[in-house]
Length: 242
Picture 1: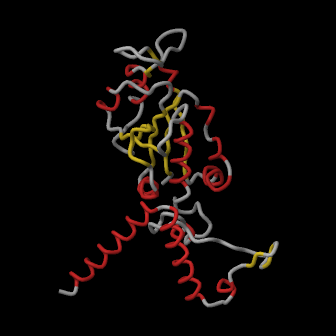
Picture 2 (picture 1 turned 45 degrees about the vertical axis):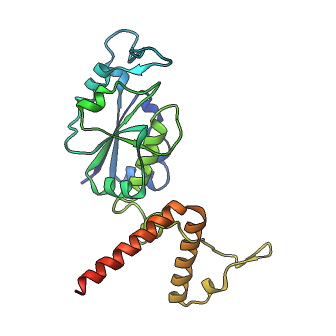
């Protein structure tokens, strides 16, 4: 079954964008996944293509109209695929989110613009807000590209080496270990000897140590979560022996 992505946007020309290149682009060409865009402006009701209006209560900026966005959403069956509105107010997108999306039949992504969308859209439809980080973008399109890239690369048949996805950053709760390739010597810097030893067990141990050290130093939040998960796993195993 082809994984189906639908993006509702005011700027459909931004897609597939970077998703038309590399792994995602090849998978798109090979029909492992499909990308459709819906232009929200097509549902405007006047000759000017108006999709927004001033906010009730006053304030700067414009708000996407519920009646216009609603008509665009009504063209889709939102029960078959998860639907997300890209918003800085949403839960932060993680590798776990990407894996969940890859295991679904696809995804519907709603891209906001201006000051956002009328809140009644989020009340009426089964839509979850999703953020790619604690910053503000001009629109949800860039965020949608990020979400799709992260999910598509996990689809079966997209990555050449099936083990790659399991060893990447965040897949096991840690940042990824450092990588090296030829030449073994470059500008006075050498590849760690253990990686040239041929001892696969020692290499695996070194990589685990490096991943743990990097995570502890750079992402204490991830490190704390990783330690918490390890403790819970030990407790779970202990209960199995009773």
